[in-house]
Length: 203
Image (cartoon, rainbow, N blue to C red; front, side, top):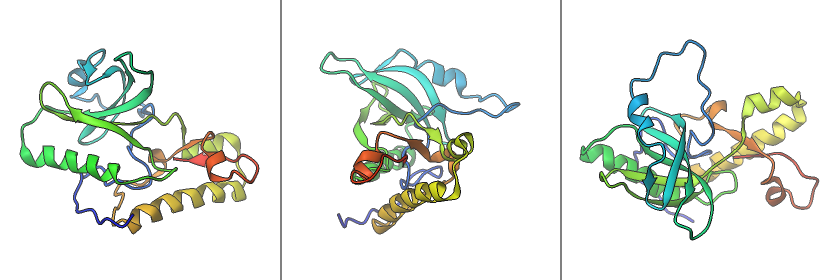
């Protein structure tokens, strides 16, 4: 694929190695100030957005909030991450930036980048993104909890670099690339190293 994406998505994110930046449970640091938008975000819980029923808040960034949701139309069952704007707005520039983020994600197809599944608009007219739910561990936490030796850490790092290079070749830059935005899972390893022993995979 050779398409060149024109910028810019939201300040918190330009799609790259990992999308979204909040697809697993958020880790809130001790003593962190309360989020003023928390009550507004809570009203989405149990609501249906398109064919998806929102279950809980996973995380939030500067512009978007990501929820755990499940398909709720009896067609099939699937757990997803659903991203919405954190605030209601009719500002064209904000809505365009969010939709642009969705379009950029739709152009990416890589085993180490969370996939886009669906998208649409809520009854209020707010755009949303439905993407792969990545049930993984933060990169540094994964390495430290397992005491991974340097060669294993480098194998994970190579997977991160591969995803970043894939995005860069399509003129897409992730502007918030950090360990908390990189999740490690195991089930993708077979796709990545099918001729070798199972290894951990990064997404």
